[in-house]
Amino acid sequence: MDARKLAEAHLEAWRSGDAAAVAVTAGSYADPDTETPLAGEGLAAHAAATLARFRNARFDVDRVTGDENAAAVTWRLTADHREPYLGMPATGGTVTVSGVDLVTAGADGVHVRRTFDRLAVAAALGHTARFTPEADGTREFGVSARAATGRTERPGALVLTWLEIRDDAESADVDLLSVEIVKSLRATRGFLGVTTFDVGGRKFTLTAFDRPESMRAVHARPHQRAMRRFFKSGLCTRVHTSVWYPATARDYARCPTCAQVVASGASCACGWTPDDAPTL
Image: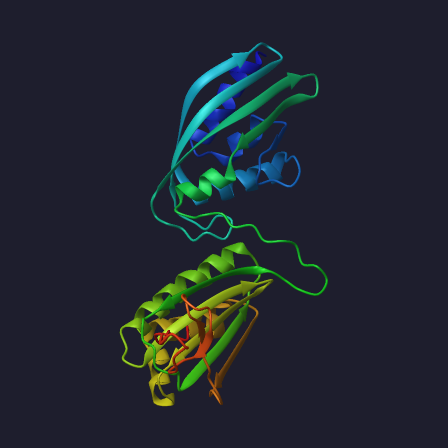
């Protein structure tokens, strides 16, 4: 059969949201999200997972070139982001990305090699890519975030938690729960700020409160829901929680004029006094 018609049939299977048809129209298939070329049940499972993440896929073909042996289809995809992708939580919005399908036809069947820019997908979902090195045998690397309040008083208590996660999908699920918890904390008086950081298979949270009594705020409904997910619904494999009371706290700043380092509350030789800064 003509490779151009085979390419159109394969793309139509994606358009229709039929994972089984995707597998039937390709003897092998690979894209940036597959470690190796897939076929049969493996391809059907991959297509089903992709179609679940990006629903109502609308492929618009820009150009089809080639002959009966090989064809290239340039397309533009618009879809609804409904499930986590590469650790990015579902946005509920629409993503648009361009790509190319290279389809070859021969005695051994139809082979599809799809290319698209995963960084462009991330950008379309509102994410900026950051690159971290591999673990070097001594250290692991990750990403971090913080939600500050602007309050500069010294914390009276720090709460440290971490969760061990299984995969990117669970990581995105935990992130959604974390967002709701932080929203609820920001509405309380004693909350000073929070920093989160992901390293390896752990997701850490360090939260600052003005005094120990303010920690009761963590028992709000969003946190209760997260706890139920762990104890009753199988979310994550391990959780740590602890409370820390600061023994000492010192801040130092460098004068922008004379470059002298001074402690918080003191002044340098030229009279500059640093402002207080939030701990988190």
